Length: 114
Image (tube, rainbow, N blue to C red; front, side, top):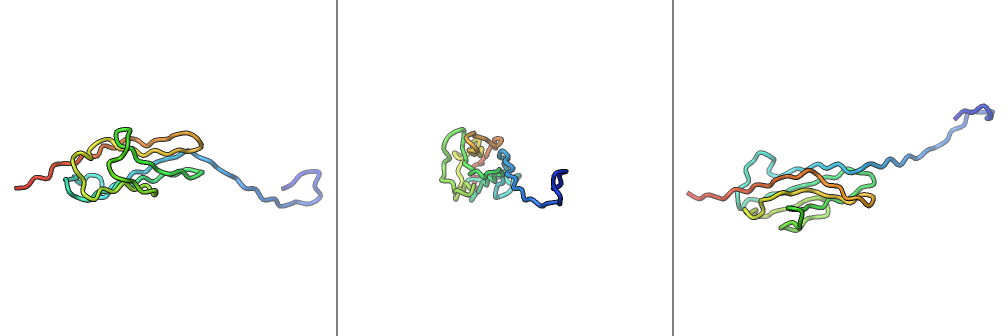
């Protein structure tokens, strides 16, 4: 730093704490566009980018999810069923405010046997 009252230029350290609200990224396995049929294994993943960090929490139709969720943003269906169809969204509590992703409609088709 320089200032007219200083005889010599001096160094100073500064620490910035840049805080920002959550942004959400939702992915699905199998990938989007692949039809979901009853009985297959499906995972939804929510990544939350925020500072300070905040935890992802899944909701279905604004309520509880039909299967347990992991603390790292996964919602795993070991054998998906038609009743799992519905609107899913990821939420996160950040600095005493609640934030939410856009909704994603999970559509599960009947397993047809011929």
